[in-house]
Image 1 (cartoon, rainbow, N blue to C red):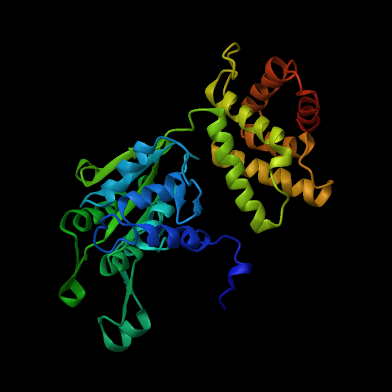
Image 2: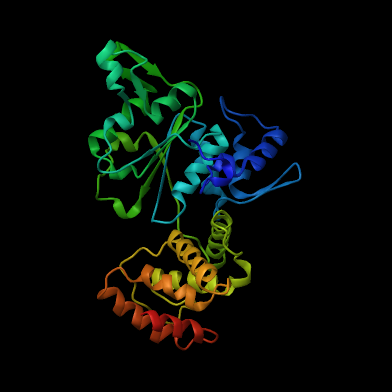
Length: 362
């Protein structure tokens, strides 16, 4: 049974932002590549924010506009797009919104893992039909990539470097020849105009399954950096927490903005190995301390405040989830965290309650 929209925990981008996409499509007067729902200019506005027909277009990506221009332009060519960055740099988020804006469908997704096989990229079989009638079109089970080829849509492949090299190589024919042989049926599937692929990869996973030079040539690579400033990262965290909070029935973030700011500052300082003012060098813990993890910490804190507090996010709520995010290694990270609390947090004006709360749970 399919859940109705209000019951869905997380709407797809094309559903959650349908009003923005509709407004952009209505006001879009620029040329559109074949099968694109919006022009490249309108896709960029959808990603970076703006206005269309009196409708506010909320920014989906906070950062350099040029990076998004390159990403959108790549998808209008015959080259695939590879988004690379450290964990939490919005690779999957950008990928989803690009597919939603261009194809109106972000669901043609392959999640790459060590267990992903070629069928996830090519096709499989309905074995009951296969045994009953032999190889046939009706017995064939299309992969999301194959479906995108037939329909002229954008396919997505998450964590490309986590799939085995032989599975990666399956993409070479698809991306170079824009066709997929089906030898069992003595035929092939040719991609129609509009088809392309967005893949994501983690900088920290470079050594898992390196990409061959042949496959790299089929991609145009865009590196997504961590947010440049505390204000940029704070904007990302508050927007995403507000969105998640609405779906979970949590209180709004703005009344607790200072607590959110503290979380973001702690993450940036520990991640960068220096305090925000540049005066004190710090040791970094073993975890990535990504923007995505900061979003999770704040959301968890708001959940504690809602169900076990007075509904307002406090230092105590934040500390309870923050410590667990920082301390992944109970020995090494604990020492780093203790040193950070004593050298940076303890002496900071206005952070007394935060220091005490962190000490309580540490």
